[in-house]
Image 1: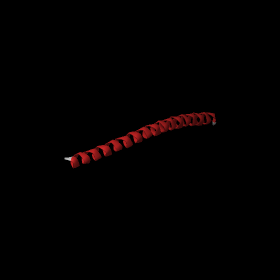
Image 2 (image 1 turned 60 degrees about the vertical axis):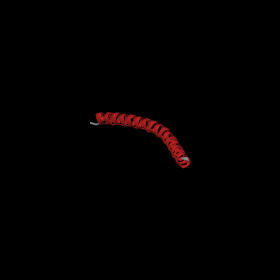
Image 3 (image 1 turned 120 degrees about the vertical axis):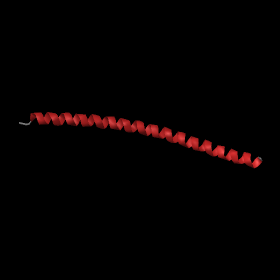
Image 4 (image 1 turned 180 degrees about the vertical axis):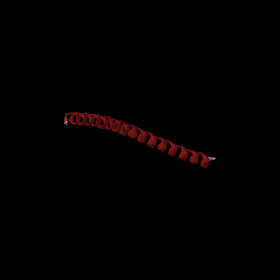
Length: 62
């Protein structure tokens, strides 16, 4: 009986440790995702600006 409780306690401690690892990883991934979304928005804005400049140049060609 005591061995069963000890084994259960060990498994529970492992489960809690894994949960904490995954929670921390999830938080890091959320931060990374936010940064990547910001980068994507900036790149899209730059692409739109470049497209507008190309359009303007094309309009000025004879």
